Image 1 (cartoon, one colour):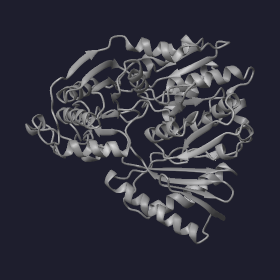
Image 2 (image 1 turned 135 degrees about the vertical axis):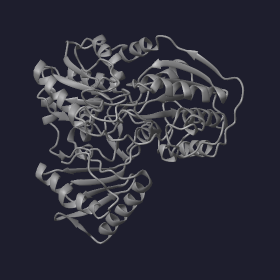
Image 3 (image 1 turned 180 degrees about the vertical axis):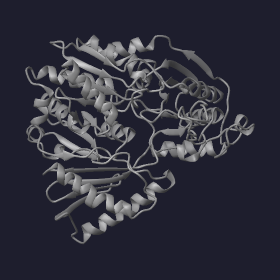
Image 4 (image 1 turned 90 degrees about the horizontal axis):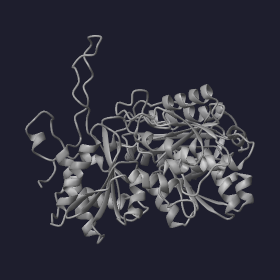
Length: 518
């Protein structure tokens, strides 16, 4: 195959002839590109010109090159060239997977195709089908038009920066090593095997009434059925597969999805709503009163439940997560230990397994349960089942009651100002340096001394009262990530953003508009 090119105009012979791969699509722990949307009318129904979609960052030949590069890397790493593939529910995902499969086969890989799937289904297939490698085609929670691939060769782990860096070099330099022996085997009915596995040995003592929100993504084909099998009374919400995502993007951090989840709880009298993202590896929670409980605080509740059963357990959480883990009396009572680590499913997954933690929690809704609770990878359905079984053990208590037992804190939503991929890391480096200088000089933020600057992933700046702010680069979108948390009030949490972080970032003209603000 020819060496990929970084840019091509669509609607050209070259676009149909050459592999297109934009270099920035290779992220820290997976790959994401803008693939494009189907052709539409040039004008809206009101007669106004329609906004032009961005040019594609990858084409099908580029995806084939990615598969050939991944297969080349698998051989280079000395791993058995047997790989699981699956795809999420978007109109182009099957085509992406087929192009990827061609490249993998050209590299001499045996491809086991499990069909329409969730990312955790593909991870489970590595164990069930004895395949060391995985390539799951998904754009996760990204908007329609995006595509990507989550990859790994060592279950339950996925690629990190080192493997992604090597893959990027192979693909962009065209350093492919085609070979014979490639094959394709379709695995029929694998969804049933997955459902059997995640529900095995789990039975609620009562039929907890739960809304299962799926955002019209692939989780709709699996999540409601899984919850029914453990004895829950399930009310599906947007569980019909529809790649246009007509109501909202399948993202349990999206405010429109959360509003729909809250409305469904109030309308049905359900005890909670579980929301699943586009590829089913994340879970969001709305309680019986219709209030969102951020995933990091659900993690604290789960950690309490787990630590009571397994005293002395270690937990890994990402730097976006609440500081409650470090101060919670119940966790201290059970000698639990918490490690704050880099944000990103691959980082938390790797660290959780490296330190033999019982579980890992990420604020975005990734939950990683290790033996005896899980296999160590992120699975939104397994996480949802864990929430239901926790609630089942708390006979007579509602989720809102459990939330009120947590130490007081006020946490912002995850705010994401636009910043080009080529620029975001340099800006974060500058912000880190500023905060480190402030710390060294005994600096203050809104009247409180800076006591720590954790730079494991951007800058998490902790103040003397335990409040904190975070600025980091997104690993999978052209954005920065901002979170603030106050231990005193919601007004103070907002002040930390509007009076501290936002003015600091406003000094950089490269930082654009925010997706939302607190």
